[in-house]
Image 1 (cartoon, rainbow, N blue to C red):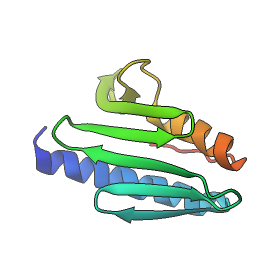
Image 2: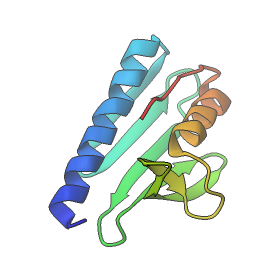
Image 3: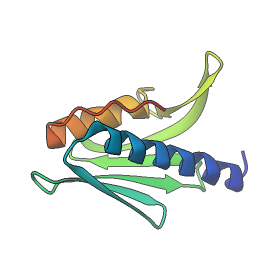
Image 4: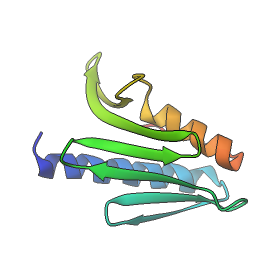
Length: 110
């Protein structure tokens, strides 16, 4: 995948995350700027940050639980963002981070 394809895939992913937050009705705000999506939990001000890393074709997640790297991998005919160490899905880890930091359950489907 070239950088333009990577950026389009990540743009689509960030939009999907924003829509999931909006649809959930959770008291969570977000800002998408300069290749980073900053999710702010309104109750306590804690943040979850997703940043694109085009040189490595990865997405990095920073949360209270730690920092994690994700790569787009094909498995069973579908491409999914997976943790480069554990193989866990980005959608699951992002949902867990939102629940842990805000107490709000959000279902991310991407």
